[in-house]
Figure 1 (cartoon, rainbow, N blue to C red):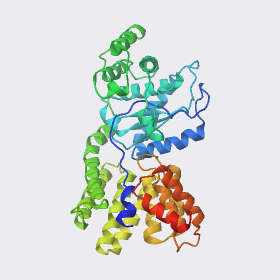
Figure 2 (tube, rainbow, N blue to C red):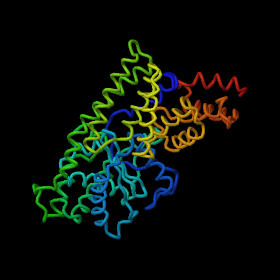
Figure 3 (tube, rainbow, N blue to C red):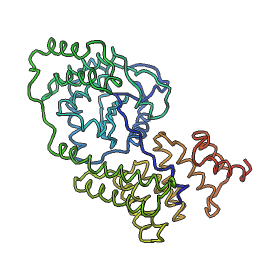
Length: 421
């Protein structure tokens, strides 16, 4: 893989804050069952990949499942709900929680790092679930794809209704205190950018506080809330270090791939030092994201080309394989692995399999055409026994439709002209 080929595969989701949201309106009729289950499943995977992939730590997952289970058990029969809520943790340090119409919930590491108790996290999750049981639809935006979910928000009246219902759920969910909902309402009202992501009516937190006081007088406002488990506290405290090292490595790799002045093999070596630190620290915490390995694999392959180091190519292949093993649904792992097999190894069968899975998982973020471009190169490769230039032409056109001014657009147009399309 050369710099030109790899440059725009380095996709980093822009940081920001996001509110509780569901999948964009799919055109299905409004009502308690809002979305087709298969559509939600695919959309959830794409959203997770737009948020740097899924955290695969089993212990953390078990803890989140228990929280959701307690809240789900508190939903009375008269509240129409999917009855099968499930939660995953995305690696992004953006602050967000997203609930799909079929009960799928995605929360981020960023949210986990901001809550001070298990009750507060349960309040966020309960508010998201309440949006579903109230059959609310968020305000439409002009964005498309999974990033649309990051930008959507509910009206002040919807937010108030969801928070009140969340307090009701927590009052029925031992050991949680419904006053935790007042705490997040206060944050929504007073702390930017929460105020933009979660607009409340005037005096919103006071209204929620009054509601909790009136409806649930048996709870004490300042009662001790359930602390976060020690393992979660440890991960939250340590993750800033390894995600910080990862971010530094990504900056250097991006500079090299963009061909910036002074970016050379030494830049890659420095980047690899940061990637190594991030991975070592994450492994020590039993918390290794697949994307760390996928990115390091790219840096290793670039350095192997710069220094003519076959062993480094083998190490890159190992990284791609480990990333896929940690999370088979990691878009970046599948895309980078596919490009590696196509451009470096000329393993056409595995390349097609990986690129097709990348298309399926495509987060449709900043560069939605990337997997289509490389699949076009697969069908356009003269050494490929399955070469089909007509198929390649269709894929080049798909790439250009998604990214008419993209980095690969000139090469795609040149190939279309050469093919005669």
